[in-house]
Length: 571
Image (tube, rainbow, N blue to C red):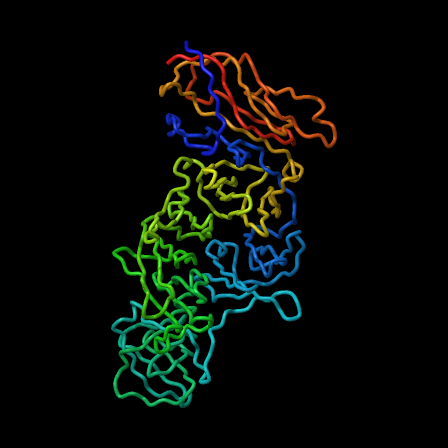
């Protein structure tokens, strides 16, 4: 047996997966529940939760900032949208078109107190302040011209290739015409769709059969002698679907992908966000591009960063032109990770990088430019903590606290404490008395929706809270299996474990409560700061599991700076 003293004063890698337990270069733990890694590398009991408001049912929350001093929480439930102040007061309740299931694919972009929502099955909605106070939710409208034509993008879909239209007059009047195709093409859902042919916009007003529809235009027309071969449909409609993703970039409104054209990117005119007319191709006019590759690219989301980043089901693209003009669009695929198609998990900006959830729902990736600023890399932020990725359903980042919150399908939340300057990238797990459902950061405060049985509650993390809305939560950290002289230990005798604490009022070491001075429990007194120890812990041959555990079950503060083990071992 060989004597040893093993001290760990850095937990910067957080909880790591068991397959890394034999590594000597990892500053982590085998388990980290309801604890955070602090700036100095130590561990502290997480903040508790305070109740903010009761909710009407299952809902998703997102942040909404009107001004520096006017911030709200938007609660999106089944066919409703509630605007809540940060103290939980319901400012307004609006009727929305989205069901609970629709919120999985609902995306949004905000600018100057206005927020635009997109969903592939619904016409975009705009929520904006009303002149007399409050908010309103309206349909997003494309701007129109003097002749009542609409500045919506037009295009030819793949299934329309080879389709010709024979135009004949219609008894409805000079502005109506009958369109007959050379084979079956029309469907009843086409009614209301806009077409562009004969240098005019047409609206389909009625469906006759699979080859025949009636359409209306805003001016008279001359019946052409031959079938029309060049004609176009509106890129967005109830039949073709609506934009899947949205952002603002270089003062353009960007739509990425749609139900019928998943690889398209539409960019509005500069400063005219309702105008998608390509015009004559001037620098400030609208732009349309298609992602072309050997794989089918379905755009999952678009992100405005140093470049316009396009995250698809197959990889990560970037459009780097500054400024973006119709004549200069340099689009390039940089990485091949892919994002989730089934659910929108909003990419987060963390220390200048774009962080997103991969399509397999097992990776949290960081999209960052190389040193030359020419190529993106997609670094895996949870490479050593895959076991904590259990089907993410929501994500948010608190820049003040340097924490990334990822809500999991099982009701837990994986939390990344990340600080590049201090070389901290530590994952851990949060658990509460209910199930975490959604998360959002508003004005540097992290809010969560928690399900307690059949009740849904909006709660917030608060450093002054020592429990979760009156329910005490346990916390725990377990050490990595002991390795010595680059070898695995086969049998171990721990004579003593010493823990250096700061401002701590309750702690257990290996299931034994540490005795702390009585005076720290006086009202207003600080917790204990100093060293405590536990002796006589025995001999074990189970050296593949954790040799120490610190934990607690009291609503009292606990912060650990370092842990030392004293004993002897055999290899």
